[in-house]
Image (tube, rainbow, N blue to C red; front, side, top):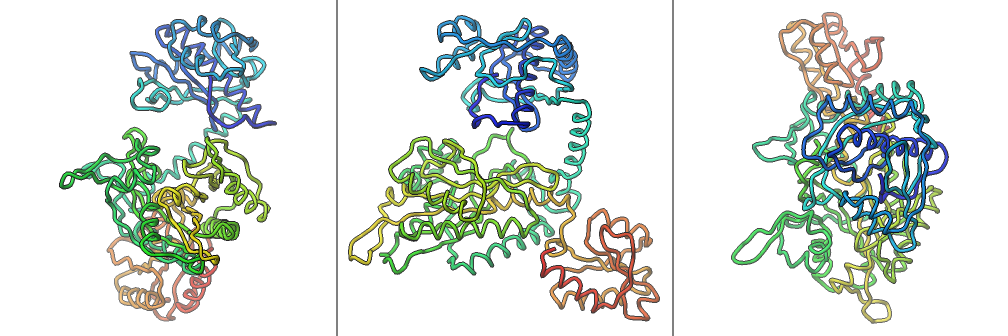
Length: 580
């Protein structure tokens, strides 16, 4: 590396594995230097499940190159080189890397007064701020995984580099366990399951990053929306709808054009004026607030919109449902007095917990993200977030500089069924946009005052949330969320009318039921619907027809049971009501 803009390094076991992987990044750069001396090393941090290192090299690294590099890395590990560091001046650092413009750029940007250090293993020295294992021999198992393109400093106007990803562990058993984890993750891949379960697709004829929801996926999306809408309605949010395209001046006033312009689609010329696809919903909600005079008696005023927004993402970053160019947010904006801020923010935390727990998530991480350039009101905003977290006894971390340009925010990360971390919900306090748009309300003193805004999107985007749900459940959706809750399967055509009768009775009670009227054999039908991960398969034959019953095949349970249609309906209704 090895410089990074990540938060302060963790302590304890997490720090140990991060330091080990950071050392492995140095080992990779050492191996590349030995085998491919034309490659210029740039940066290479430890990441959650491994490490990477970016190199500037004309020729692309191949799969065979990775195998050769991994073998050389194991030789370096076996040599057990000590990691030694020394502090140097800026001029010494620049001289040490006089042939590497990337390292020189990093050295020049280290703030005055901060230590500048060089770390050495064997015959390789790197510019790095530290955080390593004592020696290369601490790495018990490693492998290189893939190569990808990455722009220097993440900016498309900069040179394209080659990023080599790898992972490292203390023991071989840990690496084996990691492989098992990757196999499970591959089974849960929402892109794979999205196709197998006929939920959605991305069509290159229309363009990357744009989602086409199939009927089954649209049903599930509607259920997610309905659940969120119920919570919004209970808490007094008013629905609004805003245009998908507006004049560019709106985003100049809001500051998004200046601070967010690289993530926006380019202007659309209409009669000599410049319009933009909306990248967020908040300026539109502000215009609705500002459309008429407001009194303190009107506040808090809560607007909600399932608003579709459009953001420019590089094609190489697009990924199924979780990184797209067009997505719908469960967006809401609250306008309140400063005195109401605390209570309103706490209410949004309640909503976030209700949402995540209802969809089966139980492990969360909370980050209070502050602004890089703190304004006069940031202390008030941060206090509201901090007090809300502490009133709920929720542990949190500080993400310095991670806030939006208009205010601090609360980011909610969650872990799915196999332990992966996802960032979804966010709640932000905003004193800036009300000032930019000169929003006001008439106070009890008869004077005009400035309201405070709260931005909240608890699911984040429906697309990303849906992708996480697919992977969390592995496609085995709970009955209340499954697009088809049960399939009625007749053993032969003689029970087909009875199967349709059952479907009709259950549909009349609001259940999502279908009938398999195909001519396939029973075993084939059951195997097929099991691959579709339905919660229930209801088999009907001669005895079920005679008795008015169904034979219940429940997902995940080997034992079959025969019950009346009404008894099954009561069971399904109870499961749906409990959100189990």
